[in-house]
Structures are given as structure tokens and as C-alpha cells.
Length: 300
Image 1 (cartoon, rainbow, N blue to C red):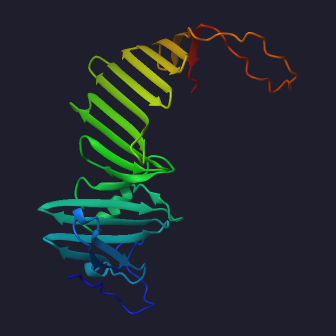
Image 2 (cartoon, rainbow, N blue to C red; image 1 turned 30 degrees about the vertical axis):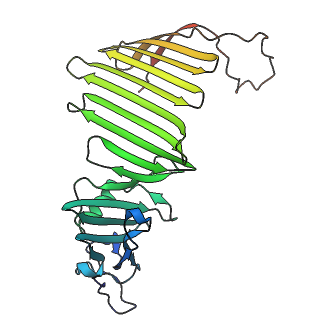
Image 3 (cartoon, rainbow, N blue to C red; image 1 turned 180 degrees about the vertical axis):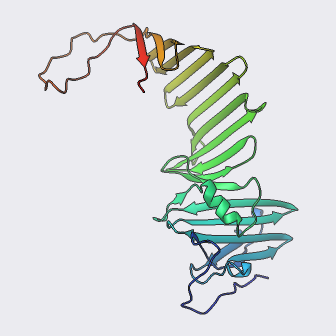
């Protein structure tokens, strides 16, 4: 059965071990609608109010429930900067899973920062690899695994679902990732893939990427060895294409020489009109060169 929160009389000021965090008393109740095959919801709901939680008594700030040989516990609180952060622990089939999330002062979902996660851990035990509420862009919200390899994230945006996968191997010498976006009917909207390898002893690195969105595709390739680096990029959209190759040499930590080749750059058939402008704010001069050598110097 559920554990009712222990609260104090109305009007008392909540006390915590840290002035940065105000705990929320939680109560819990089950939703026993059936199993997955029935299509009805089943689980546990945590609810509470943001007053009268005592950090010295865990039952006044945390709710818990046992149902069908599983245990579910929750904790929540409000930080001094107005963020609401929460954590839910579930033990199902002998395995423990933690979900951590946050909402900003305006009520929008926010990815919990590491200090916020550590703050929750003082009052509520969490796993070393929790599932974290996360945002990949301003318009979506989802869940991301942390501490696992590979890391997986699933996000729901404006009529889209984003699947994100990233992994590292051999102490970070190899990295790979993929992001696929579909609509709610499963139709592919965009896809992106990346791969990177590096050797610290040889000061060498290699990376490649591919991205497709609609009819436009972008392919990139970068390689470096000590002070030399080579980068190539090709963008295609129907019959049009744009290619660029850069060869760079880092002479010093503050000076780099780069040679570029842009074979698809063509000047317009008619020259652009020259308009008057203020002397102190001239317009940018268009560059239609296929070859270019630049010298970059970083000033202190």
C-alpha cells in the first residue's frame, strides 16, 4: 500500500540541509488499468505540494509504492533559482532504473544539470547511470541514457520523433553516432551519421559525416596529421552541387596557411549593380574565385 507523506502544520517554514533546495512532500497511488495488451495505462503516479517537507524525515519528501513485485519511489524539490527537479526510482524484476528531470521557472522541460543531479542524490539514492529528461532542440523533449555506451536518446518534437545514438570505443579512439528523424507515421524526415577516429601518439585524426534532409545531402571528410589537415565537403540538392576542398598547414600556434578549391563556384551571368554606400560601412565584396590562399593570424 502507499506511504502517506508526513507533514507539519500549515504555515511552518520548510527546513532543509541546504538553503538551495526546498523539498516537496510526495504521496503516491497506483494506476491499475490492466496490462500492455489491454491498451490501458498501468503504473504509479506521484503527487504533492511545494510546502512543508522536512529533510530530516525522508517520508515527508518522498513517496513510494509496491505493486506486482515492483517498487517505485519518487523525490522532488525546488531550487533557489526556481527550477523544479525530480527523480523516480523503480525496481522491476530485480533491476533498478532511475529517471531524472527538471522544469525551468516558466514550466518548460529542461535537461537537469550535473549540480542539480548531485543535489537530488543527497536526499534520494539514484543509479550511477540514470535516464535523464533531455532536450535536443528548443521544440522537443525526450529521454536520454547517461553513463552507458552507447548512449541512446528519444525525443518528441513538432510532429516528429527523433532517435539519437552515440557511442565510443577503445578509450575514445573511435566514436560513431546517428540521428534519425521521422514523423508520427514513421516516414523518414532526415538522417545524419558521423564517425571519428584519432591516434594521440601520432597526432592523427579522421572523421566523416553524412546528412540528408529532404532532397539535400551533405557529405564531409576531414583528416589531420600533426600540423597538416585536409577537409572536404560536398552538398547536393537535385541537379545543383557545391564542393569545397581545404588544405591547411599550421605554421605556429597562432598562424595557419590554407589553400582552398571551390570548383562549382561560378560568377553570375550579369554583373551585380553597384550602389552607393556609406564610406564607413561598405558592403561585402562577393568572391567568385575557384582557388584561394588565405593566411590566418590569431591576435593575443
